[in-house]
Image (cartoon, rainbow, N blue to C red; front, top):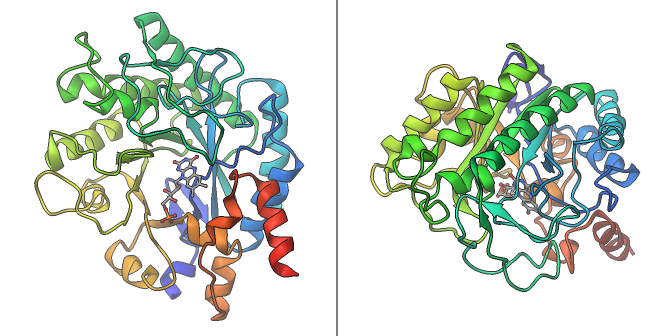
Length: 366
Ligand SMILES: Cc1cc2nc3c(=O)[nH]c(=O)nc-3n(C[C@H](O)[C@H](O)[C@H](O)COP(=O)(O)O)c2cc1C
């Protein structure tokens, strides 16, 4: 484990080790979107448990249509920024660094305190059903297609939220370009049926992402760690594939690098999966073959494969989701050679809130 437990440089930042907490929505903020003490205790536990980098849950970026879930945190006003600042301070005191994940829900819209009408690239709903973990909505609403003015509003929301993230003390920003949320919807030929300069060929479908990256880079300055999470899969469609295949994904990675990101966070069901319609590489393989961007890998990482992955991707951070939920002290336990639990999904039922997790822990400790 030596190499994984060592201090390292990532996106220009010193990190205590190569373990990151993956972003995980817990719908436990105040109804106003303000982060609270419950969340501070939650995130601090992962920092104290040894994760060198904590990435927040998806956090909404404007008061139009970016919020996707009830009790999702935002970062668009003073109260929300103050709530995050208190959390970032606690994580820093525990010795870890913290990035915020900025997210616009687009068509994956289950609850929003500002509007009942989702906005997305085209009037196309997600496949499958809304996530019961995050709310009681039974069917997806059909979104309205964004106008150019709506798109300008999205870009401005990300840029202003980035300024707010700096004010809250975050060490970096991850844009949510994965899992079927708005930025990913523009890339997707399922969601994006536009016939204007934001639809059609890949260069058009990636236009919004590049506009957001450039605007955020200008907002935070040249040195600030800025990255994007990318996937093909979405929360309700594990089979989506980019029609442009592996070469198309590489073009996207190079384009976001040239627009100003210094890291890419790949996510897939399994980090080793080879998901393209052609070629034999994983998402992580493609990114690691591109010069000039750092890499975070994610997908079914646990104690059995960390060392192999560290060998394959010697510079990458390893982001853990479910295994971290089951073991907030994963890194410390791994260091000490202690046993590690698997996630019992009962912990996240009936809703994935921190309150339910605490009740589950109390019951199971008894
Ligand atoms: C409860 C829960 C909430 C999640 N919320 C988010 C999120 O807000 N943003 C995101 O990019 N991914 C989210 N994910 C996906 C995880 O970050 C991760 O990609 C996924 O769990 C696969 O990694 P794993 O195999 O280590 O769990 C969530 C996953 C879970 C289980």
